[in-house]
Amino acid sequence: MDCIEFMAGLPDKSVDLIIADPPYPGRKDRGGGKGKLREWLSQMPRLSNKAIIKWSAIALPEAAQSIPDGYKWQHTMVWYKTWTNARHWVLGIYPHWEALLVLGTGARRGELKDVQDVIFDKTLRHGMREDIGHDMQSPESLIEFIIRAFSMPGDLILDPFVGSGTVPVVAQKTGRNFVGCERDRYWYSKALARIESQQIKLPEIKYDELYQPGRLPGWY
Image (cartoon, rainbow, N blue to C red):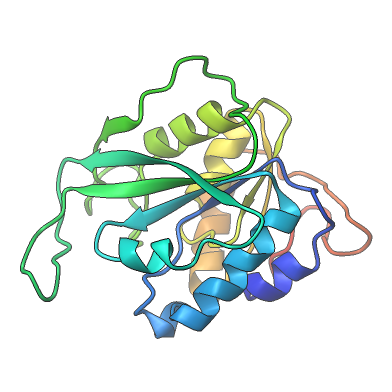
């Protein structure tokens, strides 16, 4: 299911935290592009008071022009990566960091009391234990930090770009509930298999008839 259609069907203020790792704006084959970017971003303030958007340093200027009405750009955190193969196509610079944009309103609410805004963490490479082959897969440790810093056990986490399934896996490991969607059938299947391999019980969350019990909520 497309994330714009999926998010439009969620009730107002039904989500405690949004974590999004969107496709680059230039990747129209994966749902990128400026128009799509503004469409899904505009849904977020209605759904939650807080969102963390993981954004490539290369594509950061696009994000700066797309903050939706109802949200403030409250802070920028930095993930310093141990390795990168991304390259700025004009300047020839290899950025070793990605931005974690803190968008929303109000104070930070989270399990962690003291939070630093530079996170030193590994970059997943093919063959590592967590890797399932997705070229945009984030390490579980990074997602765990974000979840613990900006939510509490029992909260509901929304991931509109599930991809490799890292956010659902870590949400469940840390005692959170989750909803999410993934438009690519191949990665939907891979993410579902990953979650099932962790022997994590899938939540039975219902908003009217949007979700099917026993399946990942919101996924086709």
